[in-house]
Image 1 (cartoon, rainbow, N blue to C red):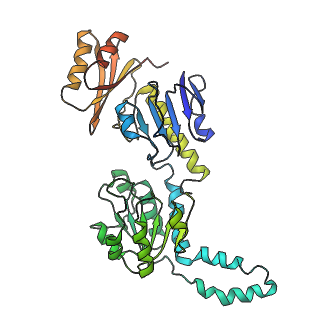
Image 2: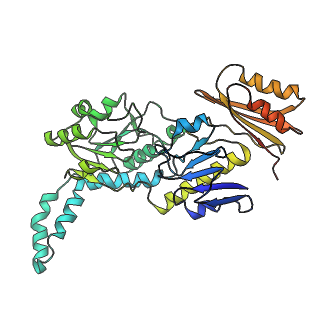
Image 3: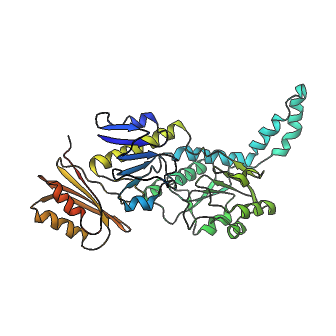
Length: 391
């Protein structure tokens, strides 16, 4: 019986994909096999030796201590693309909010309460204060063409915008899904210099923190509008405020408000609603549950942020899954233990990601706990599990 701990509310329809006969799901466990999480902070948590996997129902994993998990052989999954459509729709909405001064206009209309029959006349007299440009024919620069950025680019192009994209690490799947009319920027600076609107879709890592700063603002067109639905910290706030004062930036829409941003009238602050749709929450739950199940039951890894993708169909027998430091002779040392015990390998797959390697080994016949322990004692081994034949 696998024990699955939930740190946040996970969509119930997704959790139902755990078979009741083999899984127990609860918010409290002393020794869970896996943890499912959304935004709960895990950096101060103590992980038991029973923990094999953490499933993040969403894309960002800043709330999870990745390095610590890797060292303990805990595979961390996320769900890239599961909430992509929800975020895409909010980005398109944010461009309209920023262009047409909708927030300001709606708030102003509320001030007319009590004017009675004068309201229509006042509306006609005041509407000129909220004039804003249309999206059609304008240039959108999309920084980062992953699952979300690709959808944003395609949607904007369908609205009649010229779209320029920049992503030096674009995946094959995103490249295939991108509209042929989306132009490729030669550099980030090239994109910034020609965009009327800029949408950010990059992770927050050391190299991207505050990467939209004074030097980047200077490259941009006057009156540019910027949307950030990726992560807080990508834009230098003080440099942004200076760009407001100079007229370089017309406004900034963010899904990650803080005290400083809330005080500025040129910032449209949205309370982190990017993935807050029933459809998105269901998609994330289904995806993370399926990935965690496949790992616990079969040792297969898909969409891990700290281990290589590695999957192999089951042959019906026993399976060893082994994580180790990615150093020479590890595969030879592992197979030598099996050979010394006259254990035949039916099939084997080895993948690596940086300093970590991962092995799936299907065994013909029996394998004892003592043999598994011998493999576990090899220098450089991080994790070993023996999976029994599928029922």
